[in-house]
Image (cartoon, rainbow, N blue to C red; front, side, top):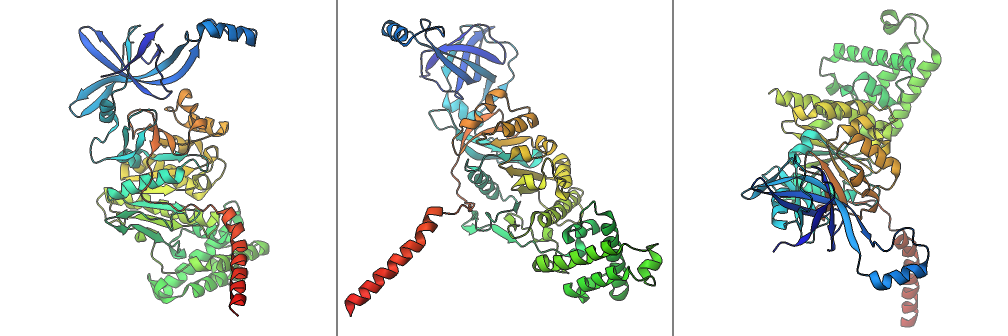
Amino acid sequence: MKKKLGYCIGSTKPNRVFFITDKTVKIGEFVFIEYEEEDRDIKVLGMIQSLHRENPYLPETTKSREQVEGIKRFSGKDITLKGDINILGEIVEDGDKANLKLLKTPPPPAADVYEADPDILKKLFGAKDKRFIRIGKLLSQDEDVPVYINVEQIVLRHLAILAITGAGKSNTVSVLLQNILNLNGTVLVFDFHGEYVKSEFKKGGKNRVNIIEPIINPALLKPKEFASLVGIKPNAYIQLRYFKLALEHLINELEGEKGKNWQNYITTEEFLNRLKETVDSIRDEDSDIRQTRLKGKPREESLYEVLNKIEEMELELGHIIKLGAKPIIEKIKDGYINVIDFSEIDEETADTICSNILMWSLEERKKAVRRGDTKLKKPLLIVIEEAHILAGDKRNTQSKYYISRIAREGRKFGLGLVIITQRPKGLDKEILSQMNNMIILKLVEPEDQKHVQSASEALSQELMSYLPSLNPGEAIIIGNMTRIPLLVKIDKAEGKIEGNDIPVVEEWQKEDEEEKKIEEDVLDFLEEI
């Protein structure tokens, strides 16, 4: 039997009503408002947005503790619980499914407010078809009501996962990736801290994590990308010009000597040595490059800087540079969680690699849609951890351009983005606004909250007020992937992303325990002899 909670009171609106109750209810709890209108029974879904208790005999002007104690003795039970309900829509049931229809006329005052029927909530928020995956359960309902989200909308409309450290971000990502893997989906993760390298995501008993080394073929980079890898800044115009002249001249020479497949006949070391020689030849007035491409005397200090940076790149990045290596995009496996480990390279190098992968991903998915020969035959979801590094609000990175393009164009080509960060205010606001879906766990800092709210029309002031008080694993879900904004307890993940927190106390005590063990062994030995 359904439980009546109370009644609508005061002036009502199509999107909000006030109510009074004598039952125990919770903020975020779903309720039904039921009434009859024009010979039709109407059932409306609402969410409790705020609550307050009041005693008419204890106004705020009460002056003393003794006065409170005296009034409390005769009016202790005269306490009313009031609040307001955000109306989400009229419930329209259709067999084992239910939908919400926009309410255009406000409920009448004194309309009955009931506890929400779990069976109808399951119809509203359960799986509709194979596009839906389970993410958790409703937070404020007494009975477990599972919540499913539309994974297709995540790929087509993108997703942001935002939270402070320790709020359950890694678990949320794990739940998402495992469910996508269960659908045979393909995911590429940019992993900045090596958390995914040791992770396990299984399908059919087999671990489906494909670790991709960030090996770079310099010949496949655009001159500007290669220059960035070398360490030449975009605003170092003269250095950039000399580098591009030398690189283009060298490649023309190699193609003339060995043909289009010149990479098969030269080692990486030989290639870089010849590149340095070509840069150095710019000094020589009689060199081909001076005769054909450059007029006037070059700047010695700029040439020296270019040569020095190439040598530094060889020392620092020689282990990930390999002429003739396949493009990273060709190493992506369909139906796997593909992980690129950036934990041992600097942010600038990671930016160069990421921008190249994003560029080729967009190009290859365009080919796939246009029925051309492509290296990415199936839709791809790209997960960017520490997204503020590549798409920072005040950082001008190479990747930022392609992240923005994919955010705008990716839906047409089956290329989706998941951006993850614990620093929302550090994200580019335009890119964040393109994430039409959000999973927001605990956020405490007001600037983070404001930045997120300004980028999302769906995050109301009422929902934002929940953010600081969320417990680990609790989240607000908004966007196209769900029908309405929801407060959800995220499921416990099957697959696990290895966090990199150090067990500090355990490490402190380890040496002490080892010393005690040695002392005990020595004593045992002495007793034996």
